[in-house]
Length: 154
Image 1: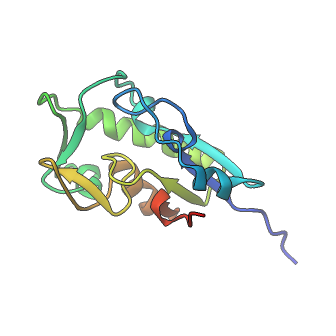
Image 2: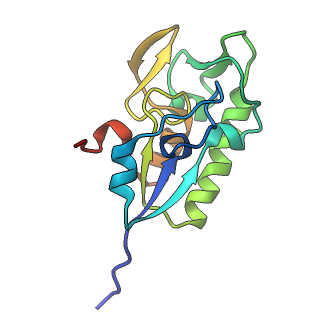
């Protein structure tokens, strides 16, 4: 009979209180911390791994979502107009390597992020349906991805 290994979760580091968001803040989410009790987790922040500075202006995916960025059909730009597409791809790739090394099969990511958004991201200042670059890459690699909003609260 094959040995069952416990699920390992990749988790957006900002959800666990790490100050790695574009503005230098975090999004500590108690229900994620509670969910992860007695579970293995790999903390990741693709934007930090990209080498982009913190703080910096917010970023948005132009004309599409993370899937199109990965196919080189869309760009990621900061609010000041700087093109950071390659940095976002590089960061997503580096974060994926950590996920693979940690053998994570599931991910809990920060909704509305241009990297980690699972169902919604911002485009032109408006919330739209779409995936972030890292979320799209993880799904393409077969990782089961959910957002922190899907973790039941108290």
